[in-house]
Length: 254
Ligand SMILES: NC(=O)c1ccc[n+]([C@@H]2O[C@H](COP(=O)([O-])OP(=O)(O)OC[C@H]3O[C@@H](n4cnc5c(N)ncnc54)[C@H](OP(=O)(O)O)[C@@H]3O)[C@@H](O)[C@H]2O)c1
Image (cartoon, rainbow, N blue to C red; front, side):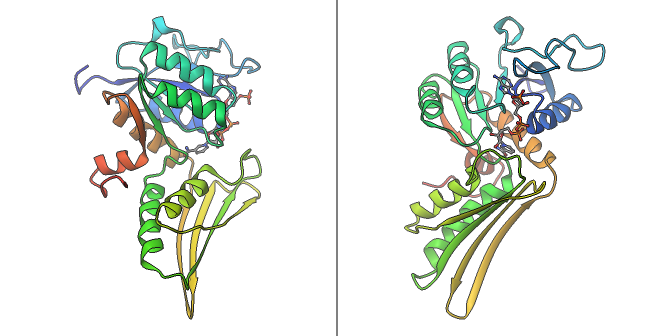
C-alpha cells in the first residue's frame, strides 16, 4: 500500500457511542476506507447499509474476504466479545487496536496470545493528552517526596460499566512504577464524557494535574491515530505512549 491510498479499517462495535464516532470520522475522511463494521447480534442495524446507498453493511462478524491487505481492526465493542475478535485478528494477521476497557483475564490472555502473531495496541484512553498526563504523573511522582499524598479522581457518565476507569488504573500503574501507591476514587454521574484529576497534596501546597474530555471526537481522532501508527508494525504490544513518541512526544516509558 502506498502513502496516497486510504488505510482500510474495520470497526467492532460500530453502533456504540465510541464506535459510531470513529465510524463517522473515518467515513468523512479521504485517509480511510471503512471495510468492516460489526454490531451485536441484537442490533436493529444488522444488515443495513453503513452509508446511504453504500455497499458496506453492518455485520455480526468480519468477513476475511472483504478485508484487503493492510486492513487494521479497531475493537470498540465489549470485553466479552474481545477474545473471539482477538483470535480472529491473530489468525488472519490483522493489526488490532483495542479501545475497550475493563479487560478481564480471558481478554488479557487472548490479547497476549494475539500479540505473538500481530501488532496489538492497548489504549484504555485514546487521548494523546492522557498519554502525556501519564508521563507528567511519573515525573511528579518521582520528584515529590513522601510528605506528598497522591490521589486520582475518575469521573464518568452513569452508563460506564467499569470503575475505576481503565485510564485511572493506567495512571495508578504508571505511578506504581515510579514507586508511588496512589488510591483511586471513581464517580459515575450524569453524562460526563471523562475527567481525570491527579492531586499531590503536601505541607502548604497542592498540585493538580487534570484532563477533561470535552467531546467524544477526541477519542475517535486518537483511535484513528493509533490505527495509522499500528499499520506495518511488528507483532507485539503497543500503547498510546508509542503513538505519542512517533508524533514527537517524549520517548516511551521504560
Ligand atoms: N479507549 C478510549 O479512549 C475509550 C473511550 C470511550 C470508551 N471506551 C471504552 O470503549 C468501550 C465501548 O464504549 P462505548 O461507550 O462506545 O459503549 P457502548 O455505547 O455500549 O458501545 C458498545 C457497542 O458494542 C456493541 N457490541 C456488543 N457486542 C458486540 C459484538 N459481539 N460485536 C460487535 N458489537 C458488539 C454493543 O451493542 P449492544 O448495545 O447491542 O450490546 C454496543 O453498540 C467500553 O469498554 C468503554 O469503556 C474507551
